[in-house]
Image 1 (cartoon, rainbow, N blue to C red):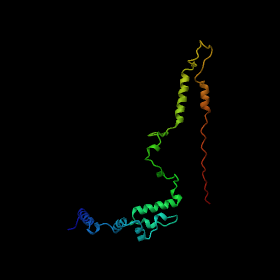
Image 2: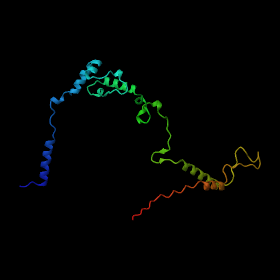
Image 3: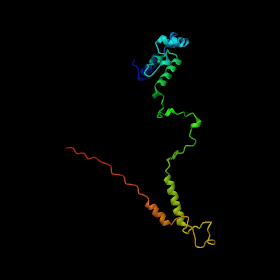
Image 4: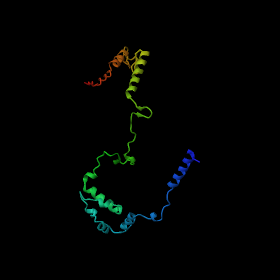
Length: 201
């Protein structure tokens, strides 16, 4: 009897699951690595013995151009590695200069250095707000208000009784406003794009 597609798929899936089962961890692999054991021994030794053991220079005498690759090994204690790196950074002034080009150079956790109320034209959901639109709207509102009430508005401080014949207009003549709006610079027309013409002969 032949096997159907479903039975064959089920059998293969079961076999693949048996092969993929991880082997139980062996007892020999659970111990610390040789590098970790060596590091533990080196941390117990005094500094000069560790330096002699690996043939490393004294971190206090490291100067410009000294090779410190030996201090980067996993079996070297961290305090020696840090001491060598500090000496290297002191020996080369270029490494100690912050150029300000890195985003992570500044301490953003310092609340005292934080800007108190940064202002931006960006509004969430609206993008950048154009301030000229507000000015245009205010100008249009003034024109409409003046068109509805063309009589000059007198100042509260000056009345006809105190100074006859003097009236102060708060809004300019509507014709002059329209001229100002009309005289605004028109947007320059975009220059025609260069379109290369190709000839095939």
